[in-house]
Length: 257
Image (cartoon, rainbow, N blue to C red):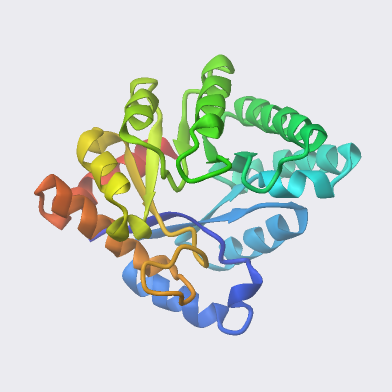
């Protein structure tokens, strides 16, 4: 088995107490883990973790909720930092739009502008993008629709819609554009995610935990090895062996990144 978690946050404070043990447990269970740096200080921590562990890879971006915390000059310096470390990263992200937490019209406008800036940075660096697109509610499609339009208009060839919770219809449109969808371990309790996993081509699916968030087991802290729940549910709804899902996702990961 070559199980992969394409998106988590091992640099977050949730792991400060026992990060080494969490990483060692992940090493035993997984082929690869991708940890995401979401703002300048976090990016430095993510890079440090990856330098110490050969199975951990890094994407660097600016989570939309952090855009308002930084001045334009700070964002520009951060973009330069990412460019300087482009050989150490495998993608730009997470970046995107979040209408659940960001509602002020002026902040929304800047969030969109910065998102587009980072999409352009990804293009310049020839890196895939990892998209965070969250609507005001779980059923809202505005952020997904807008994010899809931006990456299409910017002629982005490689994008993954991280932690996808949208409906099957937009999932199918995303796949038609050649992009991938990442399903989290919480698929085990989501009928919509299971439908998406069944309907879209397996060649467009990746898997993740978004750890420490979105635990598939009660309210406890999530960990990368819980990504196995996503594999199991995908196999179940597609009536496939887990080993065959594993092979397909390994191929998707290698080709995407």
